[in-house]
Length: 445
Image 1 (cartoon, rainbow, N blue to C red):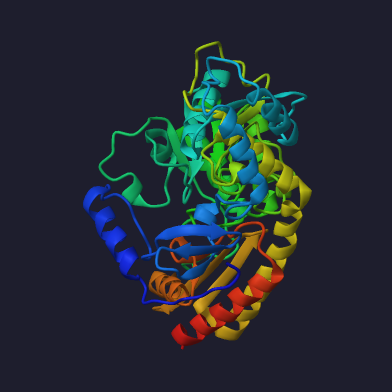
Image 2: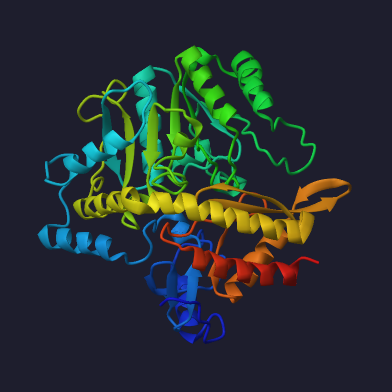
């Protein structure tokens, strides 16, 4: 499985049968962009149930960081599975959790901390909820500042802090109280001339001059909580000065900073955590997705002075599952060994190639942005003299790319995201660029 190979009509006969069964019995809340049914995977390639081979450029939404079926990860999982599958690490001791917690606490950069502590759970949304609880407990304050276009999961705590799509909140209220929203800057303001701040200065000023003076007193704010790079909101990379400005505001008012690194963390941007690009240390970090190459595990990391809640204040039956811990340990080995460096090098190469396509195909490709292998391509159109998002073109690109054997994903208003396994090579990127050139040429006049 080392190259794209489409042998049948898509979907093929076996895929159609499985899709029909899914539609009959699974929740109607599920959303699929195209009719792909996974049968097996290797590295950056996946095979469907009808024998068609695709290149995976979304890695299960930035989860399979070391690629599909990495032999070292599989071996670690098999070895631990033969020993024992479960021991509730929240109540009992086992010989897996402590060692990995030590490693993770030492590599996570936390503000004003000589020693960090870790809480293990199962998903990014669960980590987010735990971080909110921890911040309220540590500060005695009830409120949070989140950001428009942000995404923090699908739990009640997650959707209370989300503002990327209204469907995620519609008819689920009342939501958690105390969530207030501010603006996140972007270098490519689309739509053009928006009636809200998009610059670093404007966004920081809105927070202090509007929210803190008219909506919520800063001495009642537990945390300013953000994705260092907005994921579902459009792979938006903020200016360094913005993140540093937020740190100054937090320090000024005694507010904690929560960095939701669920999608941007674990080597995806070329550093272990995206916050490292901004030379800013948060007070609490949440991580999941790529932490264990596909096994379900998440973590909250904070300083010992912040994570000092009493016994029984928080818990998780499956958090820190020993098989998932084994996968996470080996994933960290691989990230530190070469994959973070590969993400930085190949990501820069990929962005350069995409920007060359942007120049060739004009204003329809409004922006190419990203860090490492967290890359967004935003599509735009001119409407009544204004630059506006072009979701129709983005969706057509995703479908056409699928027909050519590429698995991609949408995010934001009109952004195509690339978050492939961190094992991807330059030759594979060249193949992607060749296909995207065909796709753009067919769809962009």
